[in-house]
Image (tube, rainbow, N blue to C red; front, side, top):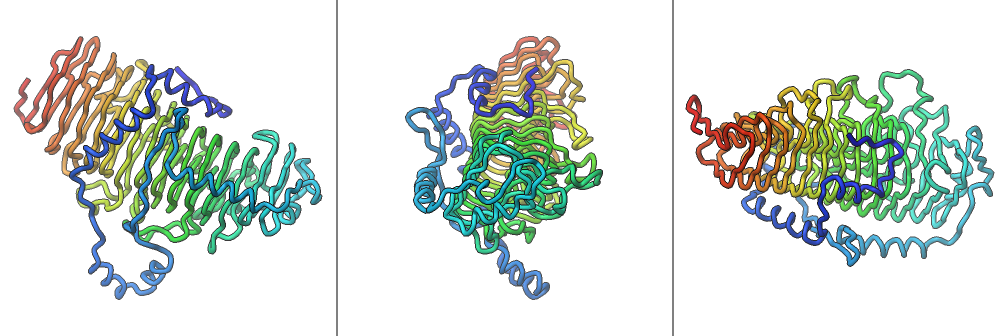
Length: 559
């Protein structure tokens, strides 16, 4: 079984994904087909809008809270610019706003009026000297490129003004490390003006060591909000972070965010989010919460990154929602390309807290998840149960050419069952070319491998391959019940020596279809089990199963 180390080179991910899946896909065709599936599955979507009468009433019932909300938040339903995914002549994939960001890079270079070496300001990379003042003088008011050589440079914090390039000699060569006396809430590198914002900042070629060891044996390694991280961009327009490693932060390795997180309710986003940010070839481990995370920000491109082995110590032991890559509250228009995660709670989590707007308009193209508890986890917390409010903002996810290898139980979240994918509360989800590989000897405790549940709607799964989940309950389960999923379409599924039930669709799922399934097993039970008569099932083939289709309506079973 594949194992990825902390020093895995994520620039190899594209080739590894192709080799493991056995598929050499044309990027143009893959993106075109996935977009078509998304259009099909979302064509009947009707958005839920804010209740204006309730909003007006709440202003009078809680004036202080409403006043803060006016100044700190904005609507999640403004007319955001919609961008497409593009493929260049060499098969490279980008969001189509990348041209704008490239022009801003040229603008950044033109604005640089001095290039300096940090040693000229008295910095010493001996792992002992406090270089905070040297960095402050070197960056000045910006419009500067600062070179940092090999060595370990101790600082209490670095704040980067607009039009700044900070460049080192490479990961593991240039190390910027947080001072032993720094408080728990300190960020290692961030932009200078969170409230008024900054623009055109570039950081590359270094390791950022948050030095969690300085805290000793503490129960929790972070404070609050977006503090306690290796690198934070808050209210940054046009930013780059490339070829950087984040080590052992109290909270996050890399956070693309707003100055303050927002918890004023579904339908609101924080003001001051970052936009047009490219994160490339980043690695990180030991994070207290997430490796890479985004909040209330737009137009983010995360490519060729690898996150592994969180400490989980930003949370209570056994309840650590520590994800490799998390697209969180209020994020919009986020692209993830050929990244990898391992030994995290979630590989990729797209979500929101119950009192915030969900991340939406997220595109995943190529991802390798190895030994994460939940390889792909899409959810809006607090909007799952029958009596919960329906999510207004949990919409629009496409995922293509993704892999889950042996999801496992983890001490990070002690009682969380392993899943290759979970879709909860989200609407308009298209997944195309998904390969899930289990360990036949591992005890999956009769749980499903891929779960569509908790009021998810308008979900399309196509070109799905699963193998090796012998001890699971079912390969794909669409949950019924009072908070059932609905309008789920499953096409082109191949399973090999996997769960005894291939596809299970629960009671209450009134709109569902299953087409073109081939399942092979030694002691398989049922290929497709349906609990609603309206479900459309056709072209089901199997080898080694007792029955192809079982329709179970209450106490009556029809085969």
